[in-house]
Image (cartoon, rainbow, N blue to C red; front, side, top):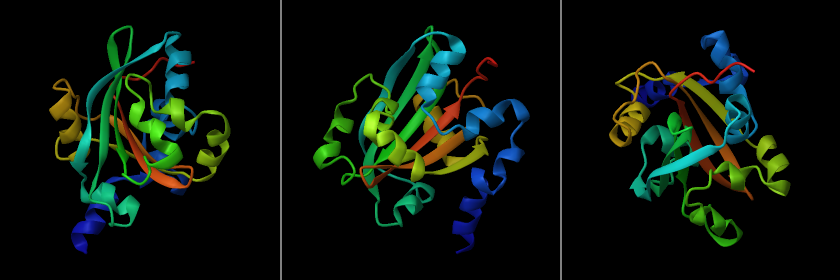
Amino acid sequence: MLHRNRLRSVWNRVGSGGIHLAPRQWQTWLSDTGSLTRKLEAAFQSRIEVKVLADCLQTIHSDESRFFHGRTKRCRVREVLLLINQEPVVIARSIIPILTASGSNHAILKLGKKPLGAVLFQGRNRNRNRLRTHREITQLDRRHTLWKDCQRRYSEMPTGSWARRTLYHLKGHPLLVNEVFLTLPPAK
């Protein structure tokens, strides 16, 4: 039990004041509930390019599994770099349980180089997703599991990066999105 609580303490829930632990210039980026792709494109005034680093079934970590009540151990894990003008700005790790990607959510399996936000924030899903989310933030160091996962796929992973993770519900089914900021986007 002690180990489980220690894992939880690394992440801070945004709604409980955890956002104030982040430097002021990061707070808007970490707490925003809209599409990160749209926000980045507006800030950089350029289109996002998605580079898929991995997209396969994997065993997920215990701190990720808790979002699925510990019942889910293997999920589809999609890891991508979001680039602006060929410069990496965000690395994302999405945890998609098998059940979430079934039925009418099957399009999530065919994203290719499209950002996940294209599915999450489309038309009728948008309002439903906003109502049913959970957001946490943290500053990563080399000991953090998410940092290690990202560094395995992207060798230039900086330490001290700010990250957020959000539990979304796509047509009633959960998926977890981890987003690690590699650089501070320009102020708008």
